[in-house]
Length: 390
Image 1 (spheres, helix red, strand yellow):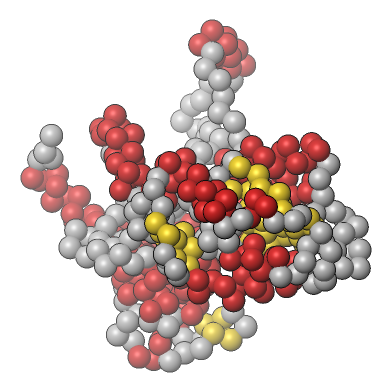
Image 2 (cartoon, rainbow, N blue to C red; image 1 turned 120 degrees about the vertical axis):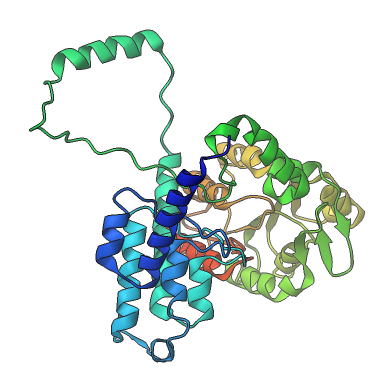
């Protein structure tokens, strides 16, 4: 149903007022507007959110762009005002990675303009959001028990004092979880949400691991592509893989586990260090067939586990199999999968007395998280840097 024209005009006016106050770094006006307005409105023409507007306003300020950040502080008053505006918007629930019509986040604009303090502010906001969502994922939803709920509500009504105009509630509303990867879909279209997301997965099989494992791969001399033409692995990664193998296996005769064979680059590097044992976990049927064709199943000391690591790793832990070095580089999996592996299983697989001099086993992974956008990569690099949060 279309909104009445006068109501549409009021909405547009509120949106433009919020964007203008953000662009002018007018904190007092913005605070008033955010009492009833949203920090996530978007300009219909540019797609700018208030975060975009606050940062883009510095584009024409040559003095701001020439300033440097010293000890994490900005010396220019105008950029300080921009940082304060951005922080106010974030505190009111602004989404750090919303995109404008140019496919840029607000942080992307800050990086492009060389606004280091604003860029770091946006990166830190992304880190906080991802850590929070990681914690929220750990909570289990309450079971639906109508009878129990009714009894609990009656008890609460009996034990809760009546509220009057002079008393204030002490409980704050729960924060809503922001959508980071799924499209924002209006409530009125919620019935179509599964169809929309399902179509996105069909268009890009890398969005879902099970869909990727059922897809057809293309092997060439220098790359491995999925059905949606995404690069699963490319030969330019060889230098990176070689360095990982050197760090994990500094001497011969160690025990290695690699999760995700792909083109076999890192496994070839591991073999060059003459491991005592070399376990490989691979789930894609075509990759497994390539491994058979190239003789990986017949190499001395090599054990190939066919299937997803989520099924195989617990079995290895139960069997008491230990390693000196573990490498992780899967495809069509996100940070949540990496965090699950690290927090739930790695401690049971690494030999605490293993390694070159008994200093303990080592774990490493290919950091391709958010690799299609610099700010996303920087956010996940910071998130992964803390073993406590992995």
